[in-house]
Image (cartoon, rainbow, N blue to C red; front, side, top):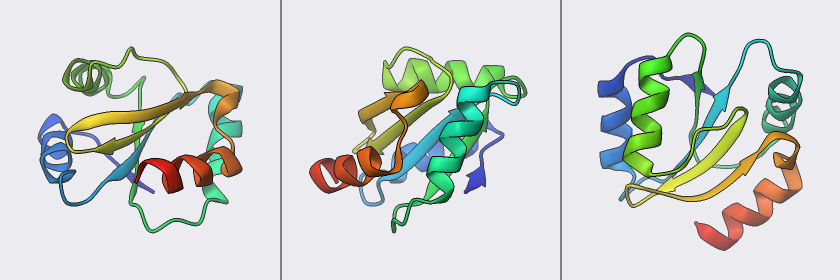
Length: 108
C-alpha cells in the first residue's frame, strides 16, 4: 500500500487508470472502522496497486478526489478506480476482504 500525498500524484494515477486500474483507500488515523478496514486490506491478495490517502493530513487531496470522481467523500472508503472513474466503492464495515475479492473479479 502506497500513500498518496499530492494532487499531482493523484492526477497521474487517475490518468493511468485507463491501463492500470487501482484500489484507493481513504482512511482516518482516529477511526476504529478505518483500522478494521485496513486490516481487511492487509489480507487482500490482488495484483491491483493499492493507494492510501490519510484524510486528516490530506484534506485538499481528499476533496480533489471527491470532485474528480463525483463520489461523495466518506471515511473509511475504498474505491476501485478504472477508466478515470470510481466504478465501485465500499465504506465503513462493508470493507471486507471477500467482498473486495468479489468486486475485483466483477469490475476489473
